[in-house]
Image 1: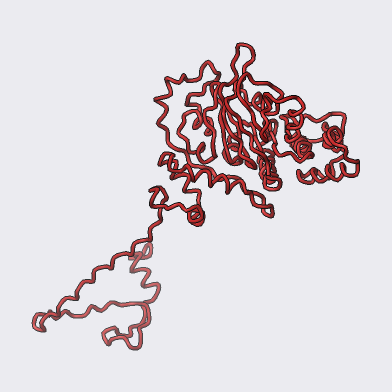
Image 2: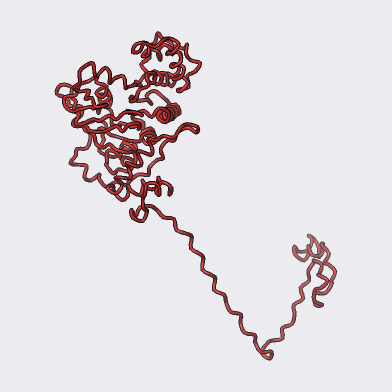
Length: 403
């Protein structure tokens, strides 16, 4: 299983420009997390800080008990072996074919023989669906294939932490969804800790177990997807729903100041989209169960509307499994049995009139073209049917010119 990454009070600036301040979060082991935020909020800077490429001014990043912000270079080198990185554009070497690109980390950081390297590379290429493209150059394949080749290269050292920077960059919506499915399936297979930086709303709403958002040089919120997707925080609601109205402006200078957020605080809780499931035949994602247990432990601390949306995603079996009593929360929408329709009031039959009060009404005899039933009453008669021509004249008038 992947390892836990603990970020505590992290602050980073370039000269006088502050990127973000006092960022604290924990990436749970084996779970998928997403980091969101408007352009220019320092999401890629955060990724570089996690692997020690940039040194923050304050704070800690603790991985396996090692603070990479203060540790010696030798220890940092060992911690970096836990990471695999998928860059925005794939970052493939243009002069190497896909096989050599994917094998590069193995040849640089291990002493494995070529036969073992070939076995590992082909195994990772099969995981991302690139078998048969080993000899192709990066310039000969599509953007989606380059992304998958970059992901295969990030997997060859069997990392416990995978950082994914803008996986949807340059991809059409269909390829983005397929890449998202691939990431979910990989998490089910290797149970690695995954952090995705993205602007794609669909990815943020359907893929991760945890969501965080950077805005105005700070971490606005971070937590399980159920908490963020049901949040009434104006900036979170605006970003996750792609709305023009809200505190986020076209540029940071036009963002709503904190003092103006009060009037935007009353927003409806949006419905929660279901999380992307693994492909049939893949192992179950144990991260989902761990996250739900964590969410339900803090359920009573959330707003009633958020509780209701969260409980709607649970089946009755899950409620029983986690020991949640629906009536206690007052949020689970109980489905009542349909009410039985009341019996229609029966009207009593009228009492028969005395014989001397019954009027003697003669029967009306009406000619009919239809043959009578043999058991018909005598007054029905057995008259011959009226000729068609005669019937026509009677109903439609006389012929033209007839006196």
